[in-house]
Image 1 (cartoon, helix red, strand yellow):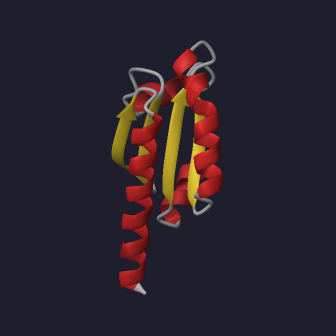
Image 2: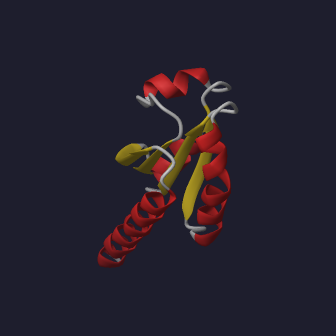
Image 3: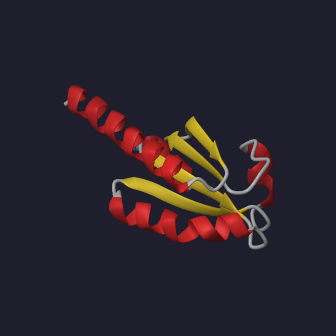
Length: 106
């Protein structure tokens, strides 16, 4: 349902696939929350693969943490591993590209 709303609005979405048992995912949790606060125009979602079992396979997630950057329901980038600098770099670029494309359309 949330991704359906994001698709209808052509929203930017960043999904953090995590698991309770995964120490690197826990390490990235606070950083992910800070990114969500910094970019309120992007939808940040946290998905525990043990609680939402089918999503991991459907989105081809094989390791935790995995971060998907999406526009609506279309995946545009993927980061595997707990690399905070790389995640921030890609989210910044993702946001800038989206903002530029919406300015051109206006």
